[in-house]
Length: 275
Image (cartoon, rainbow, N blue to C red; front, side, top):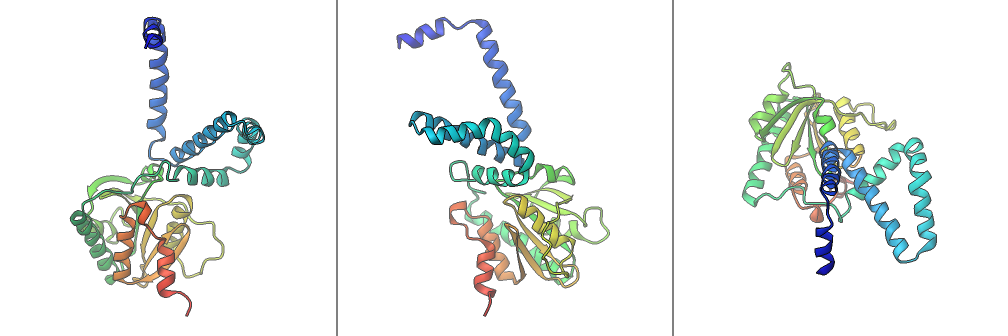
């Protein structure tokens, strides 16, 4: 108690200004990277720093030496040479349970209504053979992608989703980004997959869906313009020819807490796998 009292008595105005400047700088940095993939990278770096400090406290000298070398020379080299791989690894650390929050916390009634709105829209687009690409943002922020389209920030509804993808309208060619129960943006451009072994009959929408799920933990729903077939992309894997019931189950899985989720690809493989 006496130590705390002496500490407060010795604080000068310049110390308060110093702390305020540092706090403001960290706040601006956080706002800059918030809801972007860089946020996940920072979390991964923090884990490495914590591990380095813990190895020092526990006197794990070999581990400490390796981590210290990694944090000095190794990090710079890895950022330059292995940037894509390092980014994915740190994003994985950032999405670990230490940091992860539930995707959404919506009451059961509201969640059911939200899912039915999306199912109704996708089913209608499928019947009419209207191409569509819907991306569900989860822990990895997609603000970079949102900036490539037109911001909407509207409540998810079947009417809104159908109208966005009507042919010859300004936003029908891009992707819709949904976060929780909000349509964040439409007409967005997604990175295409680098996978060279895909079937030749997969179009740009399917390749874009795979691309965004390879670079983030998002899940994408695709409606084929040629056949009306419904597909989902998750973690760089594509599940094709889903029926409405499977789609509904997929959406329920998306809106579950992370601890209860099952891979969409695994669920599809269990139902339609090799016989």
